[in-house]
Each structure stands twice: as structure tokens, then as C-alpha cells.
Image (cartoon, rainbow, N blue to C red; front, side, top):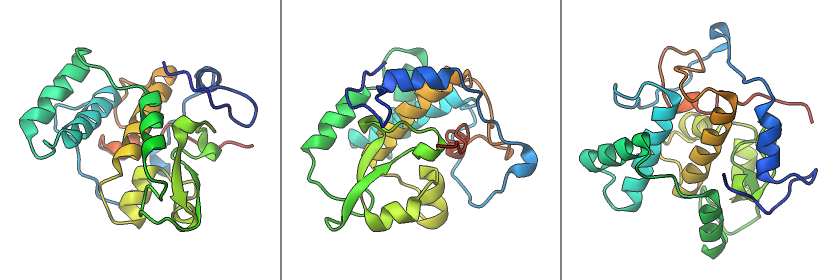
Length: 210
């Protein structure tokens, strides 16, 4: 597990923060609370659990990085290797190093004006206040996203279905940690909307009092 050297507001590293999260009860919404607001492209029928979904989404990310994002065979090959443990996710520390090399601009829209920091997984919903969960964002995008799940924000408000690579990479690794700690990697349809898709990944996070 990645050891984040940047502490949050109470002096916890990412490992320590996740350790505390492990003792918390996972959030599973009631079916009556679910509101379907957007159509999301589903994964292949062979992808049946949260574990497999994260592997599938990460395989797509790997394919995009290699220039094979339209090559289904390449994506499926990487998916199967990830699922079997033959290849691993890169560490969150790699994302942080690469982020530091990039030009400072909004990760969402590319603006260089009024820059701030955005927590990919909102702190108000259990996201850690560490560099592993932070990206550069302009104030406009930051205010628009607020405490929304990244996929929900992109699909519902922005009307887009492609999250920036750096955000996507960090998010998938963070949700893997959280689902692993809560024992929900092998769950199906966490948000109880009748299907498994990327919106299930963030359904485990609930609003917390600060």
C-alpha cells in the first residue's frame, strides 16, 4: 500500500487514514434512496463485481496510455492479467510524481486562472486530505463539483463520459483501497440501481460530520 508523506489536517498519513476507515461501516444505499439521473455505459457482461469493474476500468486506462484505447482485445488482455494478479496497478506515488512534472493548470478544463486544489473524493464523504486525493483545479470547476462523486459530476453536469487520465488513475486506486478495507470488492450493484457500473464505485462514500 502506498505511504503518502503528505499529512492531512489531523496529521494522518494515507495509510493511517485508511486504517481508521477500515473500522467504519461501509455505506450501502437503500434501493428506495436511489435516483437514476444519467445513462452510463455498462462494462461487458463478464464484469460482475466491484473488483472486476475496477480492473476493467484500469485496463481501459492502460490501453489509453498505450494508444490502444479502441482495441478491445488489448483492453481485455490487460483486464484478465489484472484480474489474475499477473500485472499490478501502479502506485499512487507514481501519480503524484507525474503530477508534479506537469504544467500547473486545471485538470478538468485546462485553465491557468484562479487555481486551487480539489479533492477527487470529497473530504466530506470520507476522502483523505492528502496529495493522493488532490488535483489542481480552477475555482469554477471546484465550485461546480463541490461534494459530488467524480463520475456523477462528469456524466450528469458536464455531460461527458471521459474523466481526465490523472483523475481516473488516482480515483480507481483510492476506491480499490476503500472497497478492500470495507470488504466490498466482491459486491454487486452497491448503489442498488439495478446494474453494475462506475457509479457503484463511489457509492460506498457517505457524508460525514467534520
